Length: 480
Image 1 (tube, one colour):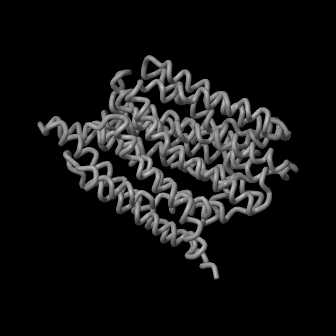
Image 2: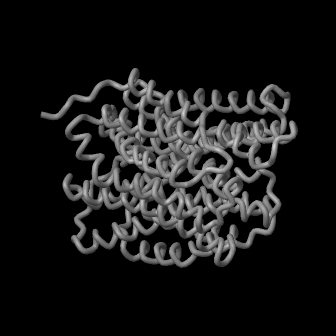
């Protein structure tokens, strides 16, 4: 469910059409691997938990370690691309992501897997932050650029769909290690082709400033914040072990904002927040992605832990949601936006997602897929309307000089929403389940009740996003 907004670029090089097509294929292949990895892990979580001995709250760090590194470093990675060349950053990102995938496959303990996933997140941030910038450079004509970005976005949706099914098949037919080993041939091929196909660029060099301190502060704030939320399932929301680290995380965030207001080359210039649409779209995105990504993780766990689905069956059960999101985004979102305006389409998509999560808040312990789950999977197609229109609205208030910064901000809030959504919703589900189990409720009933609470909160997050979009974002003019 990942969507990236385009960044500002230099003047486009004169590249032959065939070379541009090959370059686009390489960039799409790299993004396919990164998106596929994000969804392939979800259906393998129970197998990873059983094999490596993860605690329920600790298991979320296989997802959060990646998301935090990815989201915390996107702004810095994009800046590095401007300074030393996007091709260098892209190839380095693919190489690091591929090497970290091998480390994930070889992990024999929770700590090793979490560390390797953090390295994967760094590699993913490096490659993702410059991909669309290179596409915009390669395709300067608006029509060609639109088709290229459309293909790139469709690859993202396809990667999510393939990852859910492939993750289940590999986990059940072989074991969970293969969900990471599959990245090796993809990553090596993409990196080698990128060296030969992509145009080299020269930047002003690192002396122009990369704001490493800002990246350190925001990454530390995110890591500590998510760790605090995950720990609430064990320590409670009002305990000293929650309030102390939580306060420190807020202080680190405040230090980051203070630093950005005074840095010569800030990672995130605070003037970006003066635009009502940019600020509103990013706030809506944090709430939306928190609910949607939490839904993706928790549904996989519900299917396996409550209904007893195998990994392959879980991937197939979740496939309709990914297909619906991809199809709606590719076939309908642009047309509907052209007719009704992005804001109206965004509100309609959010309403569909609220309905989808609201249905899950009533799931019984003995749910039937066709009756209780399939309607939600189909309604999740509203995400195809939401993700694409948010990207347009998030960039609408930025001029040419601000486009790169607006793109980095948009991509970062997407990852922040995913990390905090998984942490909060998982902590709530674990806390509710533990309380009911301690009171003597049967295991399946306690688990189902925990998931129902998390789905209800996710629906509330999406409802808040709907209200915020309706009240903060300015109405878009309907095209004539």
